[in-house]
Image (cartoon, rainbow, N blue to C red):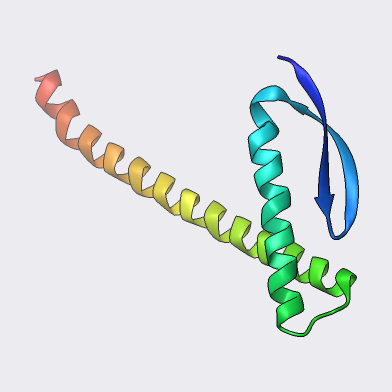
Length: 95
């Protein structure tokens, strides 16, 4: 996979990153989302960049944890359904 050198702007600073070519769009989208969130926090009156970035990081982790918990619940539901199906099918095919 080809690695690219790109620059993204976050909080009025440019960062040089090396990313896989198939990840470039996602990385650029993430940088844009951070910029958009920064603008929202600044519009709410949070002018300190460090405070705004800390809140963005906190919001992102909350979203990540919620997503992980939802995936765990879905995996458990799938496992439970497979177990139920197995309990119904196994006796039917072994007799």
